[in-house]
Image (cartoon, rainbow, N blue to C red; front, side, top):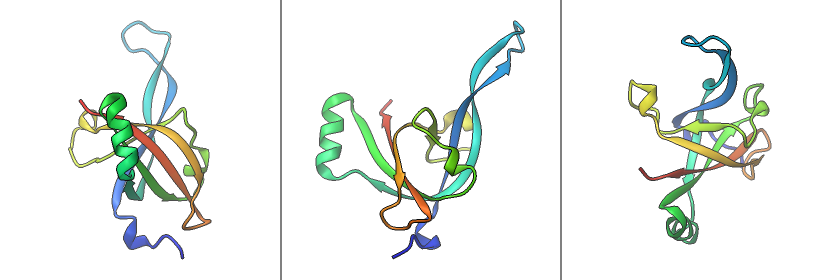
Length: 120
């Protein structure tokens, strides 16, 4: 069974750290920049996973299923994602640290990206 497009109904943004020129001091600094925007299916962790994460740091775990393409094939656990991306101000988008990227269990043409976010 493939990952139907109707189930990929959540917009997410993947970010990578890149060296950019610092406007204020010159020189280069690492800065999070948009890598790609994708449609994803979002599955929040099982009850046990949620309880375990909450006991550790009041965090939340989810798996984001996306189709494989040139941009998503370049993702790693050094990257992060933003979800939800509903606010017009990108600075307000919640950030999720990617903990795992594996071929999708549902569709060989996709990736299961597991990520965690800490409640603020």
